[in-house]
Length: 252
Image (cartoon, rainbow, N blue to C red; front, top):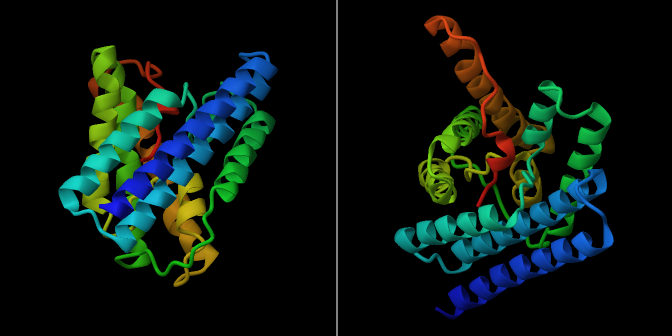
């Protein structure tokens, strides 16, 4: 119980610190604008990675049990969604924006650089070991499937009442953590994986890149292809851009 209280305090501290950074940025940097967006993404990525680091430490030092662990995942995910202010803190979202023509390559590159810089700053520096519970192909498939499911949920969340969207996405993320956590850790976010999983021994950066970068990118791309191209083509409908973008694509 003491470990749980310490971890919850650390998670709360990370959220409060990130919120303080967002509020300070709102006063110092006029928004909306590119610099405001970069600061939001950096603060969100730092919050996401710090909280996940702490929850991972808790699960390794004093496992809270499955029901409590999933409850923590759900609550922390809901907090992230409620405080990120539209930040995606996921390079896949930046790639999606470029592909849709909503963002230039240069602006997307700067945004991704801010995300990765925040992910490095959030590293705890503890020693960890092989995070994969399966082969490289199994882990990559798990990350692909998780990213596909979250992207699909994000693309259809606008159909729900606005008050239910946060809880819907949080429930989906929690279910995916339960389903894929034992295989790959269920990161489905390249920035988060770079901060949490890449420092662990057991595999090379190239192998981790195959699992945690290529897997989610293919999952996102295949989901968009299915729902915006293949299904409309088969049904004879015109493909329309979803009302809900990958701004919802976050991680616990």
